[in-house]
Structures are given as C-alpha cells and as structure tokens.
Image (cartoon, rainbow, N blue to C red; front, side):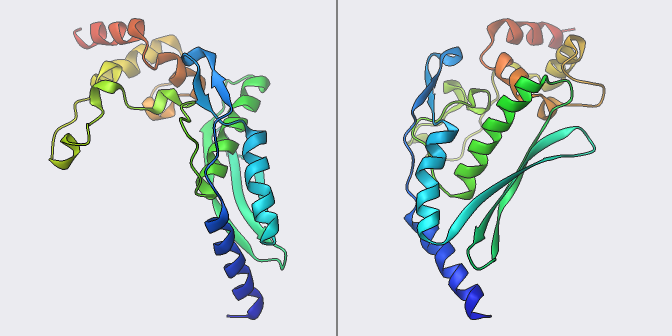
Amino acid sequence: MSKQATDANADFVAALNALENVSANKSNPAFKGSKYVSLDQLLDAVKPVLAKHNLALTQIVRTLPDGRIGVVTSFRHRDGATFDGGDLFIRADGLEPQKIGAALTYIRRQSIQTACCVSVDLDLDGNGLTLSPAIKASPAASQTPQTIRPSGYLAHPEAAVRVLQRKGWLKEGQGLADLLPEHLTSIANNPAFNAAVAKEAQL
C-alpha cells in the first residue's frame, strides 16, 4: 500500500471518529411538529470536520433507465483517494419538478447521515417508515423472542396494493416498496386509508 493511500485512509478514519451527532433544527407541521435536521445545518456540521482531515464530501445526482432518481455520495481526499459513501434512489416518474427537488433534498440528508455515521436526535421526518407504537417492543420485552404483528394497512399488504392501484399510485406489478415518498407519507397513520384497506381485504 502506498504512503498516499495510507495517509488518506488514516485521515478518513480520523474524520469519521471526529464527526459528532447533529441536533434537529426543523419541524414538519404535517406530522405534529416532528423534528428533523435541515440540509444546510447538516452540511455546516460535517464539512468543517471533513476539511480538517483533508476530505471533501461529494454528491452527484443520477437518473436510472427505470425512472428512479437519486444521489451517489462519496468522499474525496486531498491526495486523490476516494471513499464510497453509498447510493440512494427513489422512483420519480410522475413527480413534478418541485417535488423531485424536495425528494432529492431528503435523499441527500439521509445519505450524508448514513455515510458520515452520524445520528440526528428525533429525526422523524420520514414518519412513513417508522414503527407505530403498537408494534414497538419495550426494553423488557425485547429480551425475549416474540412475534410482531403488522398493524394498519401493513396487515393487509395485497389489499393495500389493490387500493393504491385504483388510485393510480401504483402500477400493475408494483408493490408497497415502489411507492413514491409523498404517497408513503400520505398513507402513514391514515385512518381512512387503513379502513379502505381493511374493507378491501374482506372482499
């Protein structure tokens, strides 16, 4: 291994160890003020630490033939060495330009947090992906094996897909994993949607 690569690796490890968790500074009114960190604050927190260790953060926007859009995150050392930070893509077909921009901002935040191994206190901006209180295990319960039963529309995924296909949010052959972020947010903790799915499941 060359001295250059060794120095770059040492700087990269030192930078990751120096990065600290970030405090949330924004709230999402659509979800009772749930907290998240803005992209600018996140960048302000990680870029100076990376620069101190001769590293820069890069994010490139890419589109895929299947209609997905996302970012490729990496770190570049002053000496030219690069470190992969991972890729994150979502389906963007049918999204308006403004919504694509909002989705990319969300993807960039999540990618940076993951690549830099930092956590954000109370970052619940992705509410549609969180577990409901009904299926969160208590500390005591987590010590023993148990079966966690899905609640809401997740209890009837096939019925949920049929309802979403009729709404035009899913195409034939797609599943819940193919939902756009804005649609996933709309059905999260939505009593009316859960009721529609439950009714569909009984047909």
